[in-house]
Length: 488
Image (spheres, rainbow, N blue to C red):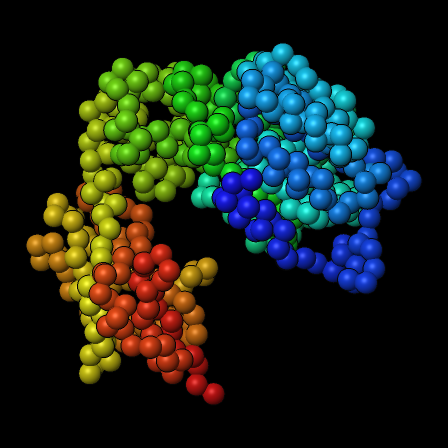
C-alpha cells in the first residue's frame, strides 16, 4: 500500500462523531438491524481498472461493524484490464460477504449497478464507487436510521479524502430532508430501500450518458415517501484520483453533457408538483453543471471549435429549460455568465471571463497595525492589473452570518484600509473572523476572496490575547481575526 493510501486508512479508522441512539456503551455490542428481517443491506460496487484504490475500499467494506450475516457486497467487474478482477477474486476468498461477478466491458457504471441491484438480497442497497472508502460503522448506522424512520432514501454525510469537492449540505440529521438541498448532492452513494426501487422501476439509464446517476437519484428523491439526511458521522470518503480515473474527471463532450443537463431538468419539472420549486432546482442545476463551463480558467482551455460547440449545445438543450427571468435566481456571477451565454457569441463570453478574472484578484496583507484611536489599519498589495469600480474589505464570522464591510480605494497596486473600532465591536465576542475582499466592475460583483498573509506578517503580529482582538495567520496562509472574549 502506498504512503498516501496508508494515510487514508488511518484517517478513516480513527474515532469519528457518533450518536448514542445507534451505538451502545463500549462494553456492549453495538445495536444491530433486526435479524428476523433478513439481509439488511447489499453494497453494490461497479469496478473497472480501480488499480491501487481497490483494496483500501475492500478493506473498509470488510471492516464494517454490521453483523456479517446481515450484510453482503456485490462487486461487478466490468471487464477490467488491469488485474482488478483477479484482486476481487482473491479478496473474496477471505471475505465471505463478497460476491464477484465478471462481465464484458460496457464502458459505463450504470449497467453494472443495475446488475448488482438485480442480484441483491438486502432490504437496502448502497452504491459505492471502487476508488472511495467507507467508514467502519456506516452500513449499520444507515440501516438503523432508515428502519427507525421509514426512510426510502438516506443521504450520508460525505467528506473528501484528497481535495475533491464535496457539498456540505446539512450540518445536522434531517428525518425529512429539504429536497432543494438534497439536489446539491446527486451522487448515487446513498442508501436506497430495495423494494422502493423495484416498485417504481428505478434504475440507472442503460445508455452511455453523462449525469446518469443524477437522473436515477432525482427520480428517487421525488418518488420516495421519505428522504432523510444523516450528518452526525463521516460515513463516506470520496477521492479525486491522481490518474484521472474518475468518470467525473474525464473529458466532457458538449452535446452529450448539455443534453444530460436538459434531461435532468425535464425529469425535475415532470415530477415536482411545485412549479416554483422546480424552477429553483433547475436553475441551480444550470448554475452548477452548465455555467461552470464559462469560468475564466476552464474557458481558456477550450479551442475555438469547442467553444462554439458548448454555446450551441447549451442553447439547444439547456436554455429551453431556463427561462430568461429565472436568471434572477442566480448569484451575481451566475447572472453575468448567463447573460453572456444568452448573447450566444464567443466574444461575449470572452469579455465576461476577462472581467470575472479581474474581480477574482487576490489581495495580500503586508501589515496590520493597531492605532491609538482604536482602529486597525491594513495595508494590502494587489496584482499589477488590479482596477475596480468598487473595492470592499469584508470581515465575516466563520460559519456564521455576521459580517462587516469597509470600502477602500486603490493607490496603484496597494491599498490602505482603516477598520473602524465600532465596526469591529458589532461582531460577536470570542469568534473566529475571516478576512475577504470583494470587487465590483460594472455589473460584475465578484465573489468573496480570502486575503492572504504576506510572508513576514505572522512574525509582526502580537500573540493571542483573549482580552483583545487578535489577528493571526491561518495554516493555509490566510489572514484571520479572533475577536476579544466578552468581559464578565
